Length: 158
Image (cartoon, rainbow, N blue to C red; front, side, top):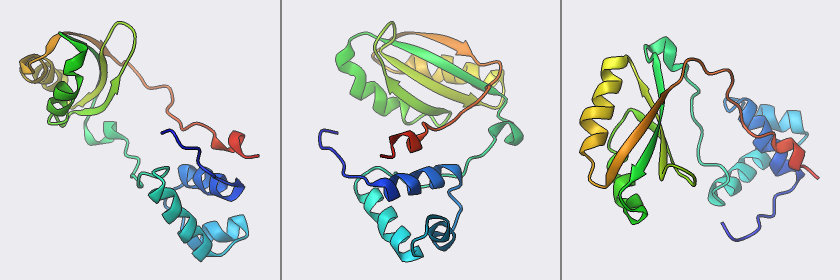
């Protein structure tokens, strides 16, 4: 993103509050920030149009739904020019929840969530290895997630 966004203190306060609790109503957030619910609505709409806010998601603890395996997979491509083609193929695998184009040893780095080790084996052996352009992979299984958080945008508030 090349253009500088003109976000003010209220925009950043709204982002921070919504990152903490996206279910808060515009009216309640307005009261908290001493503006009207309509102002919050307009600002959220502006942030969405700018691409700052990409939507809201329900934060689900997947372990409670039986997804016991989280793995990170480094992918080596035959050629880096294959990134776009391989990326489109990876999107078709529902167990892959995150994909990053990276520097360093790997061309790509993915996060995979599975119900059990058999499902992970299927993703690694039957799904990933069949994608043309992937030379090889390296898998790291997560034993525990100690924390997951957003960047503290309040530090950006002037």
